[in-house]
Image 1 (tube, rainbow, N blue to C red):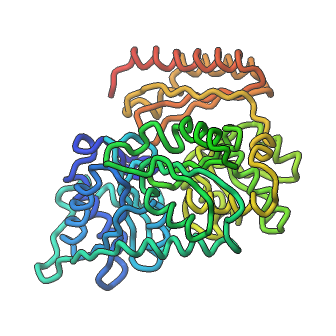
Image 2: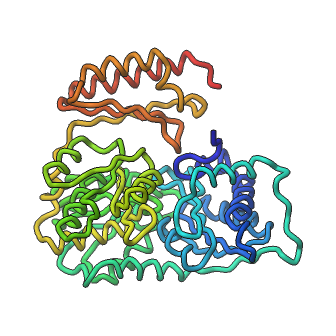
Image 3: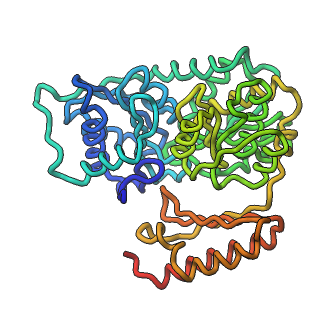
Length: 452
C-alpha cells in the first residue's frame, strides 16, 4: 500500500506534511527512477501554481534533482496541463507543484513521464520506496551536479497549442473567466486575447494565499452573479492549477463535468469524431447523464474516480473523450491529461458553431437528485471504514430501499482524510435522509475504532 502517493500525487499541508525535505527526496527519487534508462544526462521541467509555498518546494525539488546529476528547467507559474504538454517537447520528465482545488496552505507534487502522462501505480511505488529509504540515494560526482535554467517563455508554446485546436477565432460570444487566483491568472487572458474573444476576468490577482478562496471551480457563486449582472453569454471557471473547468450559463445554472461531456460528446458524434460513439465517465457521474446518453445514441464506459483511471479506460477502449463530474475533461486528440483551458476553448468553439444558448446545454441533462457528504476519517482508517460490518449493514439496508431507482456510493478520498458518501435517487428528501444516515454510521464507527 502506498503511503505518500494518493490518486493525484503527493499532497499535504506545506511545512507540516509536505516538507522541504520530502520535496528534496522526491526530486532525487523521481530523477533516478524516471531517467535511469536514458543512458545520458536528463532534464526535468518544473511548474507550479500561485501558492506561497511553491517557491520553497520548487527550490527543494530542484536541489534534489541536481544532486543526482539531472538538470532542471523552471517554467514558473503555469497550469498543470502545460507541463504535461511541454515535457514532450523539452524534457524527460515533468513535475507540477500544486494542490489543485485545495486551500492555499496545502500543496502537492504531481509527476509526469516523458510522454506527458501521469505515472502508473507501479512507478509511483518505485519512487516512493526510494523516498522512504534514506540509504537508497547516492549523490552524483561533483562534476556531474545538475544545472538549473529558466524557461518562463515556454508557456507561450502551450498557448499556441491550445489556439491550434480550434479553427478560426472565438469572436461573437461574451463570457467571464474565473481564474481562481491560480495558475491560469496570467495565461487565460493571453489565450483568449489571441482567439479574439470578448471576455472579462475575475479572481485573476493571486497573492500567494487567495488561490481557490471562495472562487474558481469549487466556489461558483461570484461567477454566477457576475455573468447574470453583466448579461454575458456564460462563464468559465478554473481551479487552482487549471486542469479542470466548469461553466455557468447565462442564467447562472451550472454545467458540471457531466453536462460538458454530454454537450461535447453529442457535438463530436454529429461531426463523426467520437470513436464508437462512446465517452468515459466515472462512477460518480449522475444517473441523468446515462439517461441522456441512451436518448441520444451515445455509450458510456465507466471508470473509477480519478483522471488517471479515466485515461486508462480511454486508452484501453480507444476512446477520445472522458472526464469527471468535477470538471476534469480529457480530450486525447489534443492532450494527455485533464485541461481546463483546452476544455473551455473547445466548449466555446462548439457553442459558437452550433448556435443557441448555453442554457440549452445545461438543461439537456436532467440530473437525478444527488447528495455528497464528506466525512472526516483518519487516513489510517479511510480505506477500510466502509467494510466495517455496522457500516455495511446500513449501506445494504438503504441500497435495498432505493432499488433500481438510485444508488449509494461510498469511497475514500485519495488526497484528503475524508470518506465521501454519495447518494442518488428520484426523491431528494429520501436521498438526503439516506446520505445523512450512512455518514452518521461511518462517523459513529470511526469513534469506536483505534486510529491505527
